[in-house]
Amino acid sequence: MIVFFVITLLFLALFLSIQFTYLLEQRKQDYLNQLSNAVVQVQKPLTDSLLSSDLNEVKRLLVSLKTSGIMGKAIVTVDNATVMNLSFATPKPIPEWSLPLIGIPVEMTVPLYAYGTMAPQAKPQGYLTLQVDSNRVYRFALNTFALLITTYLLLALIIAIAMTWCVSRMIVRPLRKIAGELQANQQVDHLEVSQYHQDDEIGLLAKGYNRQIKRQNSD
Image 1 (cartoon, rainbow, N blue to C red):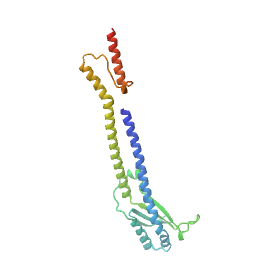
Image 2: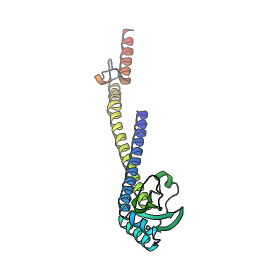
Image 3: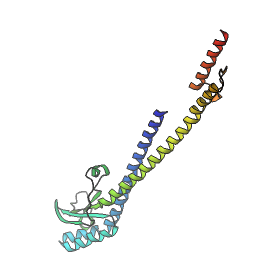
Image 4: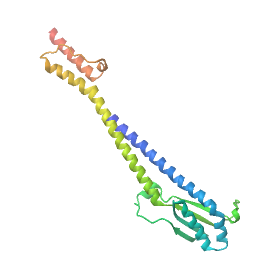
């Protein structure tokens, strides 16, 4: 029974771990989709601003992406050189061990093509890297983990109560009944058990006792 309980808890922990990973990846994908939809509107004008070296316009366009509400950082690079690096979120301490575990930072890199061309041999004018607010991702992961841990503990408690009830009903009560019969009578010639316990340990105990009594009476 204990082995069954431990195996059940292990499978439950594995299922909740998979569920946590799925929910986290789904949320990160939703963030990236929001960024992708936002960057479509500024991709071409941002490229034109780079071509004209208008950094003020580049900054204005990047700041306009802040309205998405999930933006953490925007980086524009040209020829592997950082042209502009803007942070939109207030940096907060995040445990270092959680960064690879959660997959932070969540970011996407978009090539900036002149006039919107995307020919296979066309060289992009630069790249735009957008990062989701890492604090937002961390808080979501932490809240989801806390919720799943609470669910796990609650299910473990329910399973423990159910198993305790089953043990009490299937083992303790029959044994208590047999003990009561033996204490109430100085000699019990025959022990009766329910049909559910004919072939288990309680049934074997009753059959052994009955055989012993029958052997003593025959002697």
